[in-house]
Image (cartoon, rainbow, N blue to C red):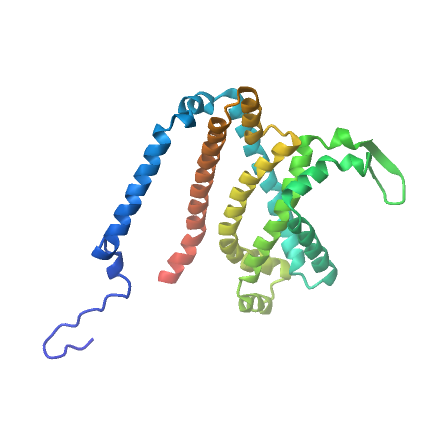
Amino acid sequence: MAVVDGERPRHARPAGVAGRTGLTAGNTLPAVVLLLLLAFLVQSVVRNDNFQWDVVLHYFTSTAVLKGLLRTLQLTALTMVIAIPLGTLLAVMRVSANPVLSWVAAGYVWLFRGTPLLVQLIFWFNLSALYPRLSLGIPFGPTFASTSANTLITPFAAALLGLGLHGSAYMAEVVRGGLLGVDRTQVRAARALGMTRGTTFRHVVWPQALRLIIPPMGNRAISELKDTALVSVIAMPDLLYSVEIIYSRTFETIPLLIVASIWYLIVVSVLTVGQRLLERRLGKGQTDGSMS
């Protein structure tokens, strides 16, 4: 840049930077008021004997609560094991040029995303009302195996079916959004180089789509964790149901609900940190490439 009249040029500060350098006269008062309100809230919670913090500490690491927490984590993990591959398959079907595959996937997402998860859980739990016996065989042909629906559809199986199928519908939309976010010109260029559709998907489309998929997929994992609380309506001994059993006997409702809430917050915080680290790892190559 040229020097004018012997003066050295000064770089203009980007707009908005001045307001981020610290507290100013315009925002000091709101910040102080907010801190005072937060301090008052914390004090009222800590000093309020009705919260029964001694009861919270007593049950926080009790055997029943920890078993319920493990069941919640198990349901969350198995739900994601079902939802991720099934949702990916549905997303690929949804963007397929084959209209039958696209319509079937769209119908699946419409059904399982359009009905409440609570309704689906109750439906699967009462499946024996529609099909007293479940059979495995060839359509319009011989039956190889048959069993009672009540024997096969346990509360755990009903919870897994409801959470997994419902979650896969949402995951399908997450993956579909990531696939559609990849620049189509790169796909055409790969095809022009002689790559097959499968090779193009594996080496061009999927690696780029994954960067777009991970953030909402992490949010879905957190949502699935919280959705497991609904399985308490079908008597699944998850975290919420475990504390419900305790406070139905001791009538200490509020402190037991606080125990469950704290555990949910701890697990969600861990998942959030893991999501951030994974996003940073996947985005590192892209960031490094853009800066070179």
